Length: 373
Ligand SMILES: *Cc1c(COP(=O)(O)O)cnc(C)c1O
Image (cartoon, rainbow, N blue to C red; front, side):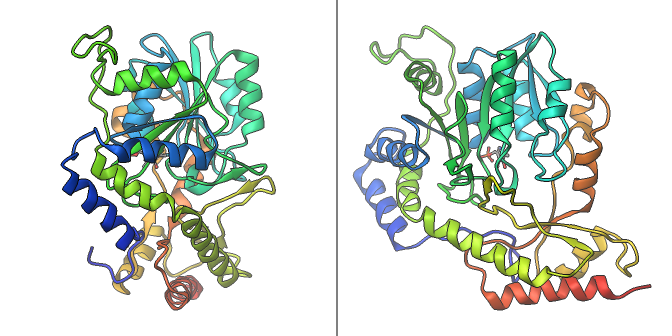
């Protein structure tokens, strides 16, 4: 809103409208109706897992996953500090304690070595967040989890369709969690999903998302659940979006390629990583900038200048351990994450972006950084 070139914009067409209209007209506007199951089936098939449990949003997906795995008070959960605060919130909702882990300098996701240093006898799980569209190093994470008996929850909210060694993220962990918020790779407005290959976990999550109600005996409750259901209207939107996901990903990758070529040779700009073992979906195309010896001098000034030109940008996430409600869980600094966060900037990345707009954005940045003091 307010910018000529927004950072992210959903691409919603006639197909989506048709299915949502159908859902509305059918009268199945809440969480019963054919589109929920269809969306769960289509999306879990796409990622390559047996079961999908659609929920109201990505944060609910994370919370549901932790509760289904039996994680609660007295437990510790390893999470990256450089990510959306919702990951820490979900751990805190479960009653467990978030333990903040530094980022890997080469690909910005959770650093397996720092994670290992922070394991205690209370550690029950690790949340591998595939950040900004790039996969974690899953071999290292799975090896660690095996050695210490930890559950692996993948947070794929920024990485639908991203790959690790040729296999889609979301198919590695005990449970993987997705968000379909408006700025993600595909959207249902608000929405999320848990994926798993474990039938028992899938059934448990279905019960927990529906108030804990016994599926065979309505209004009989064996557990205290939540209302984390997705609506049929959202699922209808999702069914249409899943059909376009490969197109969205190829568009994102093309946008990244164009930006990369424009920033080539600009030594003040570090382009987003793509490790040899990863296929990134470049959720938000994000760069690191060296502001020294520029007239701009810091990120806020650069963001302001870009804003004046109608270009919306976003800082990278603040490290969670530095923010007031989370400081009490902090175990000291995470220097790599702090440095990446301070230098990082996300650029407009929506699939509707044109080559001309990308050139305008890159050139405006390059010009601003060139003006030496
Ligand atoms: C967006 C996001 C979430 C939360 O999703 P919501 O649908 O907004 O609740 C969780 N984790 C990460 C890494 C995200 O980017």
